[in-house]
Image (cartoon, helix red, strand yellow):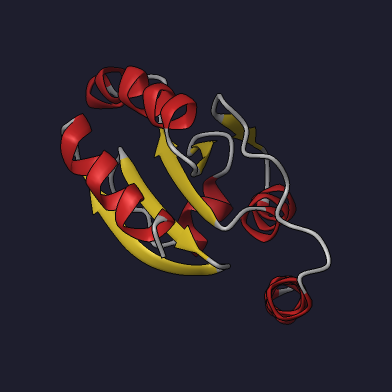
Length: 137
């Protein structure tokens, strides 16, 4: 199964590179609210469709995750990044695949590649600066 996942990632990355090189279509419009993710394939699709994606690995029982929720929603609405939410209880294998050991964990992708990881509660200004540092490229 791991080889299949790596092959999907390789193809998605190649699609992104081809779009950039040929200019034959831009990335999908950025959603203005967080996209719920249920499984590796859905996450790969979102990462492949958008230039910058912030993934929020969270749990419903997690107090800091609930505190982070309005910040994540604001980033989805007000930045050029797509925001995805992964419930670690419902997607344990996906969380394990990304090395999530605590929640909240935020993973930032740029052009299909994981570029940043933030564990714990961060302020909106810091997260916005992090996202915008990759969307401005």
